[in-house]
Image (cartoon, rainbow over all chains, first blue to last red; front, side):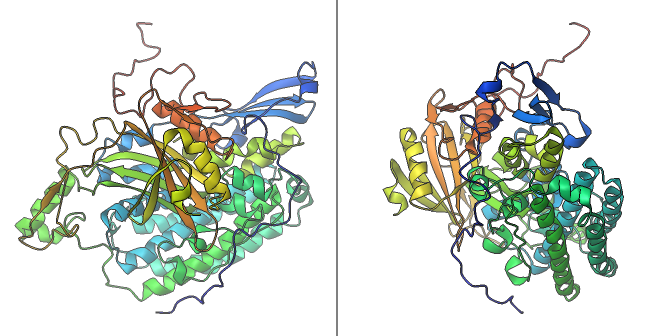
Length: 432
Length: 181
C-alpha cells in the first residue's frame, strides 16, 4: 500500500491579505441589509420582490431588494418555500429507510449527502467498512462533486448570458449520470450506499467506461476555459463583484468553495480526512480575491482535482475485483440472497432487519464531510432503538445564503444574479 | 486554556471520539466568546436543538448489546439490555464549533433547557448563528434572548406550534382550499 507523501504541518488558518477594510456584515441583523438612513424616506427607493419563482434564483428563493435606480441599497432573503420536513420524517422511519432522504435534501450533491448520513450511522455502530466500499464511495462522491460543479457552472454562466456553456456542461453531466445508472440503477438519488458498505457489487464494464470519462474530462475542462476564461463579458461581470473577505467568511460560517475563494485554505478532505482521502494525492485550490470570479475558478479547478481522485480510486478498485463490498455483520447488514434458501438464521436476520430495522446504540454524533457546497454535517441522536431520535443536517447552502447581504455591498441589480449564482445554494438543501 | 476553564463549565464527556462540554445555560454566550478567542474555535458550524420529551419512556426496549460492546454475532453470546440514560432537562441546544488548525479540532458545547426557558443568543459572537437560531426557534420553539430578529424562517409566519417537538401532532393537517371553506 502506498501512502501519499506526508504533508508539512502548518499553522491555521492561512488567510490572504484583507480584501477590504473591516467588516461588511450588516448590523444589527447580519442577514438583512438595511436601507441607509439617508434614503429611507426617499421616493426613489423601490422595493421589489426578486422571486420566489425567478429562473435565476435556483429554485424558490425570494429576495426582497430595495433599489435606488439600479443600485442595490437593501436586501433580505426569505426562504422556506421548499421546506418539506425531512428531519421530522426521518424520526419516524427506521435507520434503513432513512438513507433515501438525505439525497433528496441536496438534490444536486446527492451522493455526498447520502455518504454523510451513512458515515454518521456507522460511527454510532462502530462498524468497519470493507476497503473496496470505501474507495468506491470516494469515487462516486468525486464524480458527484464534478456533477454538482457542472450544474453550477452551466447555470451560473447561463444566467449571465453564456447560453452555450450550459449545453457543454450538461454534455459531461450526462456522462456522469450514465455511470451512475450503470452502477446503481438510478441516474440521481441512487441509495447505493448502505450502512456497512455498498448495496451491490460494482458491475463489469464500469471501470472501462469510467476510465473513458477520466480521460475525456480534462479536455472538456479546457473547452470550458476556452469559452469563459478570456470572454470579456464574463470577466467584466464576475471580477471584483460580490467580494467577501476571509474574516467575514469565517464569521458567517462559510465553508467549501465559497470559503476557499475568500483565501482560506481549508478543505475537510485534506484537513480532517474521512474515507481514504489521506491516501490520495490532490491539491486544494485557493483563490484570495473573494469575488464571483474566484468562486468560479475554485470550482473549475476542483473538477480537475476530482478527476485526478477518480483516476486514483479507479486504479485501486481495479485491483479489488472479487473482494467484499459490504461488512459481514448480520445484525445490521442484510444476509446474501442465496443464504435465505438454506439457512434459518439468515432468514430470521433478513426478516428482522426488513420489518423492525436494526438497532443503533444510544448516543449522539456529528459527522462532517466536504460536500460540493461545503461542510455537510449530520447530527444524529439515537435512543438505542430502530429509529433515529433526532436527525439534523448542517446544510452548506443554508449558510451560504446568509452571506448574500454582505456580498451585495455597492452592487447593481444585475450583479445580484451573478452573486446568488456564485454562492451555489441549492434550495432543497437550504429549506430541508 | 482547557475546556474546564470555560465560564459556566459543568462537565466534559468523551463519546464516539467527540468531546461534549456542558455549560450552565445563563453563561453560554460568555463561554462561546472564550472558546472563540482563547481556544481558537473560530467557526460555529452548526447549532441544533433536540427535544428529549418521553426519552427512554414506554415502548423503548433499549439496545441489546454485550458488556464489551456490540458483538452478538458469535453463537451463544449473552446479550445485556441497556436503557437510555435520562436527561437533566427537556431540551438540549448543541453548538458545534470548529478550530481551523492542524490537526482540526471540534467540540460540542451543550446547554439544557426546560420548556419556556430562554437561552442567550450567540449572534454577537458569530453572525452565522442568525439563521441557525431562527431555525431552532421556528421548528423547536427555543427562544434566544438578544437575537435581533427572532422570527420564523422555514415555516409560514402565522404557523401554530413547533413541528420538530416530540408532542407535535403528526397528521391531522387541515386541508386548505377544500370545498368546506
